[in-house]
Length: 365
Ligand SMILES: Nc1nc2c(ncn2[C@@H]2O[C@H](COP(=O)(O)OP(=O)(O)OP(=O)(O)O)[C@@H](O)[C@H]2O)c(=O)[nH]1
Image 1 (cartoon, rainbow, N blue to C red):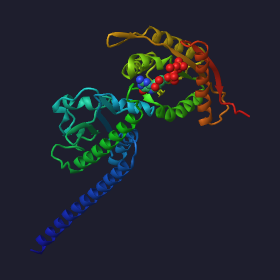
Image 2: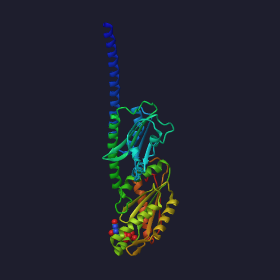
Image 3: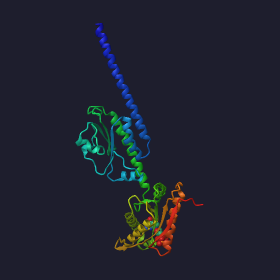
Image 4: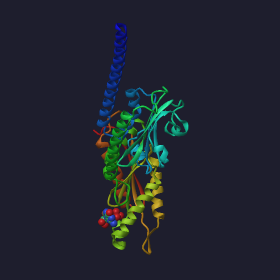
């Protein structure tokens, strides 16, 4: 009898110890989750959130692979990340088409190649157990967060998924919030009439462009475009005709530039381009090509055809390698030099390109 009681007590003690261990494990997991989420909630940009999910989640949750699929049918996320010069990360998958409905459902369990391979295309060794967690907000599918482990029992089909569900809700809120902020930011940098960026965007980017060219010891050219006799376009064809000309001229210039060149409507009928890693001869050649393109452009408006020309001023920043920090003064000098050259192009007869010369980062005494 006494022996039985002792055995029961030993079993009970062992059971209690196991339970205590599990409670401690759960408490540690909860603390990690909270720390991870707290950090996530404090991040202020889409690129930081992506980095946190791809890089930190592995450490916090002791995972072997993590990937993030984001629905990007309009290409806006890609553009936003490009605007941060965000180099694409292993594990980030931007989806330009909607996923098949089956792939949008949550899945926790053993790695199944037909179901999971699309979520981990970037790694050679596939995980053995995974948690594929859809990220949704207000009924909108944002993407999936995909967690993988080389331990087969790390994610099992019968395991409680409260932590994962909770994590996916928090990640979804953070993503939606930041995508909305990015959208507002993007729209605030766009000129409503022409659809190209506005002057605020140039002011925000010119310092970054100059610094990047200085770092890489590369020239940066600035082109200042102005439509000739634009007042008479308005006078002859009304503001509607003038607006159409502005939109089509902007599109035609944009078309002649590279995707990563900055191109903005500076104001009225003036446009500015920044061409990275472009020296003086190349910038003049490009400006001449744009000038000819606009000269050949025929704009159909009601029953008439409108033709316009542009005058262009060009200037080029050439870093001298003196490590003087690029400041607003250099940016102002670069734009001013192109603007002065444009003034000369107008003065010398319009429909022409003039060179404003080189601006260096030598200190002006
Ligand atoms: N339709 C339209 N016109 C605009 C807009 N913004 C500015 N303008 C007009 O652009 C014209 C600019 O005229 P000016 O600065 O005199 O220059 P210009 O007639 O192009 O002559 P030059 O530049 O000397 O060749 C003005 O008539 C403005 O009203 C706009 O958003 N839409």
